[in-house]
Amino acid sequence: SAVISQKPSRDICQRGTSLTIQCQVDSQVTMMFWYRQQPGQSLTLIATANQGSEATYESGFVIDKFPISRPNLTFSTLTVSNMSPEDSSIYLCSVEGGINTEAFFGQGTRLTVV
Amino acid sequence: SQQGEEDPQALSIQEGENATMNCSYKTSINNLQWYRQNSGRGLVHLILIRSNEREKHSGRLRVTLDTSKKSSSLLITASRAADTASYFCATHYNAGNMLTFGGGTRLMVKP
Image (cartoon, rainbow over all chains, first blue to last red; front, side, top):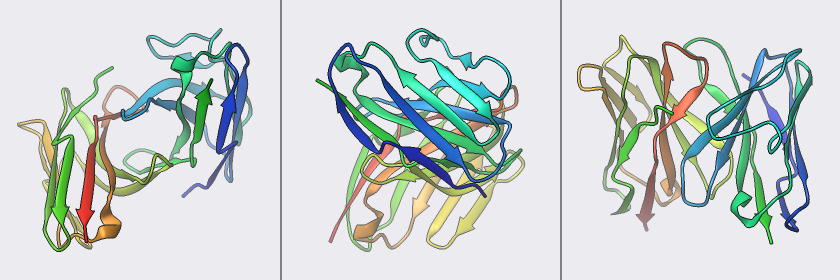
């Protein structure tokens, strides 16, 4: 199993600013995943973060808007840049336990952009 | 993305009744998982069913998988008010490492 500490748990930000979300895992993991959950919606994968290489972004998400760092095997950050009200969502990080095992999630960051 | 579909989108039942949620997906999978989310917080894993399994139980939960129909169902028996939450199915596709989530079912159990 894995325990993920994600922070901040929530924030209210002004449009045009940036917010960096951190996830710390209690064990070393190869891949970490960042999801966005818009109000009342399901989770959409933003990117996969690998240690030692650039993150792999899903269609519709770009590095300039959502830069990701992965400095080691237990930590990752996601930055939401130049925010607008449309960025108001819950952002979640996740790791997987391995093939045919469950995924583990941080508690999420509830972001409101005003 | 190859997101699955869930139905119903919302379900309201009385305590003690059973709740059934359905999930459909599009391509071959390694496994299908069900998660629960309370009040927009982190997801909690409920149950994983592998592609070669047809049914799995965990406490009051029963999950079925029909790979020929590319569908799964989650049954919660004898529901409780504390079961009120959003429930998501997620598929682990053969070609990738990430999970792809269905649209979710918002369950409300009235005391």
